[in-house]
Length: 238
Image 1 (tube, one colour):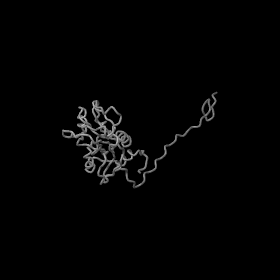
Image 2 (cartoon, one colour):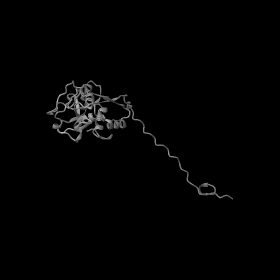
Image 3 (cartoon, helix red, strand yellow):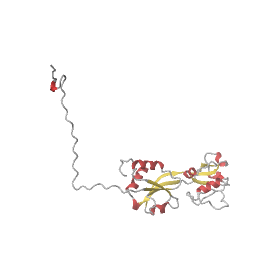
Image 4 (cartoon, one colour):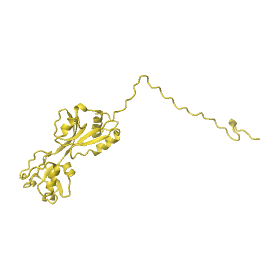
């Protein structure tokens, strides 16, 4: 005769039956609560002058605000302020000095000036140049120069019209004619195998800053400001 185990199960020990857990009931929505409106589709337009390198900040933006595409807009130094005030960009990496009326401006970093010369120039024999080392050299100053007048006694003015751009000036230097003095980032931007650059001691520096219009201090702008300042996604503004 078959014996029944405890709990009524034949031939074994009985096991208590488990009652399936019921999912917790969701709390009812508050009466009269307005639904959260979805964000309007938009693009964050970031202006950048030649030589600016916003790559790491753009990567962080895409991690933090993937739903808002970022468009990088090239700017000239001469047109950087107009682009901001005309609404062509939401914020911009600009080169100082800039008229800050109606603008917020945060200096970011300062670049040293370098001398760009042909690769076979005697000037490249040293690691750093003094102003007097340029005596007798033809000093080329392009129309888009950003450093302003530099006192370099003994240098000569070219006997040809000034090039329109820094790229044109460096192309001229590559032929063995003259030298040009530019911020380090522009020397790297327009680097060629037939030119080299060396730091120029005592030359003026150039500062890159973040600027945006006072009238359009939007949440997107403040997010980018926070990224540039190193704030995390959970940091408070400040």
